[in-house]
Image (cartoon, rainbow, N blue to C red; front, side, top):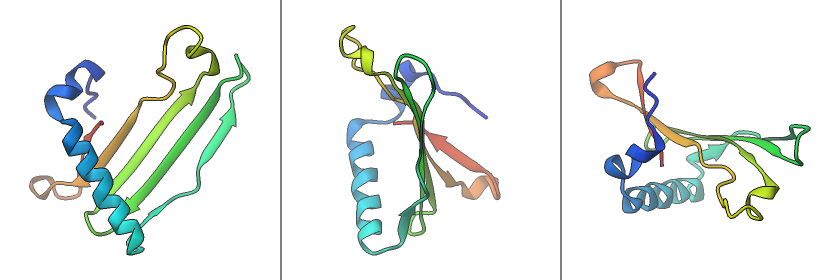
Amino acid sequence: MIIVPEAAIAGLVTAADCYDAVEKVFASMAKRSAYNFPVIREAIGHADALYGFKSGFDRDSLTLGLKSGGFWPGNMARASPTTSRPCSCSRPTPAAAGRWSAATC
């Protein structure tokens, strides 16, 4: 597994790339060829924080999507709007049959 630091993301994936990916998966969902798996959303028992895990699959692009992260309601009061950033998209790579590559947006 390769973990990509958040600071490196802007050099690897543009905002336009992310918007394009989201637009394509919404189109696939409209055709019913993409779907979401059940969402996990639980209180973690500290500072009114919540943990969430969301995922889905797009059969058109063979893309798995995953977002796992926390929501910390106190962050806005501390001028820290980041509440839940981690997310990734994975798709099979022809050069590595059976393996998946990942990008984080």
